[in-house]
Length: 218
Image (cartoon, rainbow, N blue to C red; front, side):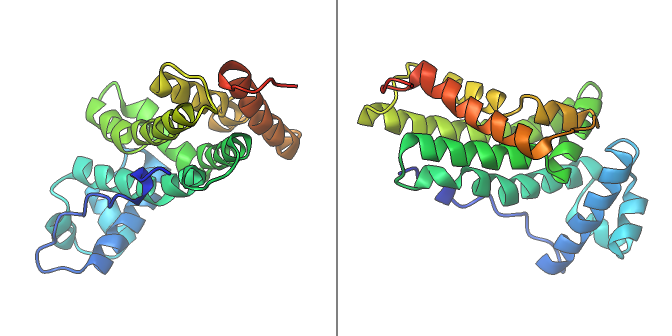
């Protein structure tokens, strides 16, 4: 059973003379402003107004906008990613575990927060590459490491035949992004979203097991 999901996240930096509740209030305000204006279009003044705090209070917590955005990304990943990858901690058949992970990943990828972060990172990465690094470290990279760890466990148990667990994890997450993920990110309409979602989930699992499973796929 994987222990990666149970490891404590890096605690937030202590806030001089302020409470954690106030920090969460600021992050909630930042979420709204970043969603509406992106990173470059967001200002610390607008975030302070949205959060209902003074700029002085805002700067007690975060030294600049990049620091605030990094904290927002880290918190969002810390809240969403463990739920999507929780099935790796259960002692279930491989197919069931992969199906639950695929379902969680599709939901995460197509969530409002997931789409917002993707759009901001893609838009701002050429100008602010450090934002992409923060997102990669706390989101995709961590998810890949957790799934790769589980895949290696399955290899050791003889249920999967994988020589490169990290690459296999990357492949699986890519399969989960087909059709639904791209169309959502591009704001394209979906006529049969529920049906397509199930198709993506089960096709991802089927293709993964066809490549790496030790049992014959019927």
